[in-house]
Image (cartoon, rainbow, N blue to C red; front, side):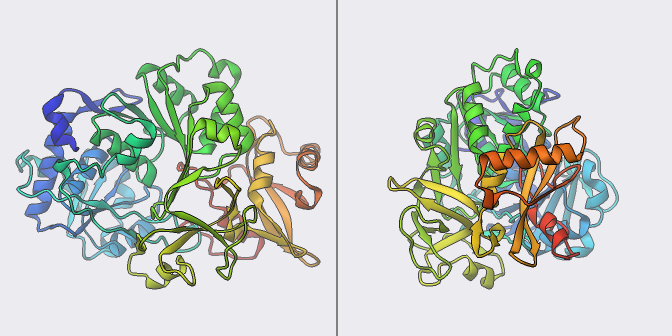
Length: 517
């Protein structure tokens, strides 16, 4: 389905609600506005297979722009709103966008983009245009709110977060079916796994430029559900939204759970969360203790999946599966799992190695970068691909992740996985966030260092350092324990929950080019 269907069934039903202001866009308005933009883009010469981009904060207009592309056969790239002009301009140029939609809120950075992307000829700005941009509202108003004569389904072309270099455009084949034929391509996974339907009220607390939030939002709308969009994550605001809008489904990253759990008891209590049936989480492994506490608070409604924007595979664990296999990210429902060593040899169950998914054919390519595409493929099987994660499979076929391959610490010839240490230390009440990295050590090659963001109101001191070191020794084998602890006011995370550990690690290895790109 798509907004055109639901604009006929229930035109005045909210397609999206702003969680803080209460502002609403109905399905009729979503259909009309996305039609007008689709007509404008067609008039400007964009045709199926062409590319466009959106550079915007969490804004209600995000949805109509996305649907205009998806109902026009276009590729749409959502650009991280926290990037600099140079970084965002690189993506705008690299994705070969012919049109960009941005907002007045980001006007300062948006003004820097054009010199980087000479191939982009249409620049639209919503909420009031500045020099170099057309008014989005005025521009679409000159076009009819009618669907195009032909509406082949479009596709997202999103970019990796670039923790190990320039972001990579992830190119997947466009869908060949027409959206209105309802072959189930949009929202099929959400419907099958989590029961999304027209009665769904989906809370989206994360940035829309990220693949999972925009994917789940469009899936909810495709199935006739209502999206409740938070402009930014706020612990109490999220609980308030679940209560006020009778949210049925939601999606989170583990850092959001950690922040909610560290709220004072009086701020956690008193909310009616009874409507909340499904809480999905992904994007990063969830510490065992954090998930156990969330299950105790919200009940067995937490569902976990492991996948990448590449969609080269997908594992899933329901609440009962996780409770019987604590720490798992589930069994594969897309692709066949293979755990391999660095030479590509398969490893036995229980042995950690690089996680590969096998599909009939390679499902993606990195845009204009054959070398990176090849680097994601198995050395012997072109239809096996990996995202750089390390894990193992148990005898029942459940996948457990141990860490990212690039962050493994080799100390004295022993492999140490930082995630295990981080998962233990985050449970200490004085720790708000933690990253564990390997630092140079003359004797051992690398030594384990914990970089800690202390909880609000906790002061740095030798006593706190000693307390955290003792806590680590109580919960982690001594050879894995941090040999030192440093403190940061705030760890470099984006609202997606992604930790830019490279920026931390580079400080200790003498690297100066540690920009987030």
